[in-house]
Image 1 (cartoon, rainbow, N blue to C red):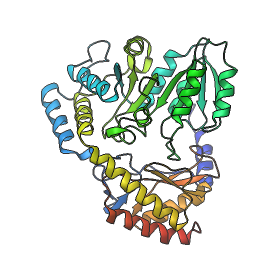
Image 2: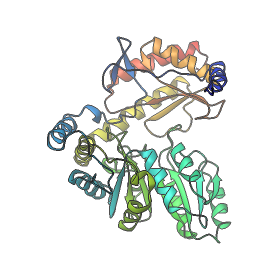
Image 3: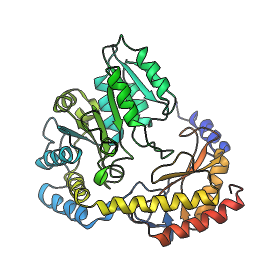
Length: 391
């Protein structure tokens, strides 16, 4: 009888490489300090940038939505699953982003899959930064479009790819707004200028820029003042927004097209009412709360300056994502485990997510961290980093 024993060899190799990790089960909700195995530890790996997961307005919105609508939507959006709360969320998001329309998906991953998989065909070319998120890479794989990859933020290679692609029906340049593993920001103004010169579409995934960059967290397009010049913006509702989901912000034409063509939209049950209501409340909180963003950046800059002064290699970080480059997968995971033993949870990130010799502990600083929290983490990092030979 057939079985799946052939998978065991690969798992053993992961163990041998130091890349095998069990899921971490937390006892309680997301926050600056969380409970793990009955022990309170400082959380330095969460995407909860603004601490909105526990915001009272979001919790109240979720409870009220359950009372009004129940716990589920009952269907996909194109049949019976579009409730008025979904329409209200999309209108609020469009106003927030300054675009004609938005369309909400179940996750940022399915947003990229749905958009790229539906707008690109065999007569098109997609030109992608080599460090773009896995959801972009997988979305491109779903298409029959020609694929070109340019070295990370290398504008000369991007221009060369554009020059070589004049014969295609459409040229689509895709980039992250903030790169999730390195915490650096895309050179969006220069990308837009090149795209305009060669009549290409600009597509920006702002998963880690949503709620982080721009006025009140409007994203990288707002951060650089490029409104009206970026054709497709992808945002997340799962990180700084504090809930779950993803969305496209762009033209009404694109929204209408995706409703009819994007398979991840067509074949996924819509957001639960509580999720949609919480997202709506979060967008409203962001619209009136610049202090959350200011606190986030103050904390991030403080932590990065201290880490650099200690001598850590923080790569290209410009944002609240601050990697500490360690090296091999095994060394990276040992460093992560040593930090946890001292009360700081900072997850190791290793191959294939990053290059084999570029394993890192990825810190994410949030608005919820106090200076006392950060000083505690910095003290642990300094002591542990010296033992590991990193500083």
